[in-house]
Image 1 (cartoon, helix red, strand yellow):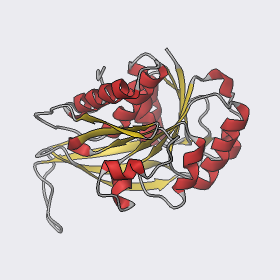
Image 2 (cartoon, helix red, strand yellow; image 1 turned 60 degrees about the vertical axis):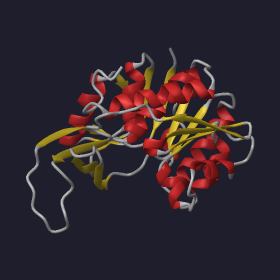
Image 3 (spheres, helix red, strand yellow; image 1 turned 90 degrees about the vertical axis):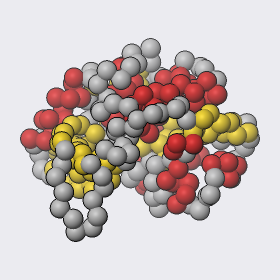
Length: 284
């Protein structure tokens, strides 16, 4: 199996499950509450670790109580944190999540008092240890430096980039990645009404995926659009982290040199299985 480094953030998730999403100014009782580790990069690594890969995280950690909860969970999934800078001041990012039992949707309020991983911290990582690098599309100015550094130091090392949100100047990062993992949220925010239109706007030599909710997942390779319908899912209980699971499925399959079509199929099925359970434990 592969040795994979993911760069992004790790959070503490406080999840309140409700019978249905509350109206504004309403007071409702939570059916349950769970507190667990979250964050896109760490979620993806959690799945990759279960798929048998050596998983490494590059993210800022803070020495405080919530940081200890997060670190304990990372250790439980055998995610290596030796490349995570540690600070003594600040607060770990926290996501307050309202999970709708009716349809599995999740609404997130996020708070952070924690700096993003810097280029200065990343450049000390020995890239020769890894078979794949995965990045969250955030902290654009620093990430551009990081991606350029990776291309200079390890030009043949595969890089995937998650583009979940329409952050300012995020498009400047696309050139540096081998694989672009787009979300429908990004595509719609950029004015695209369909996945096909979004992918067709990319250069012919780009390789990309685009998830489109219950419709399915799309791929872009050699100037052609591919499509895999969503795996039938009779009961969605927790969609939180489904996109992160899809990305993990893609990386796992692409590392094994499977075709894009087969990779889309595998990643879509894995994400559907995630939606039918709470959390990531025993997903694989």
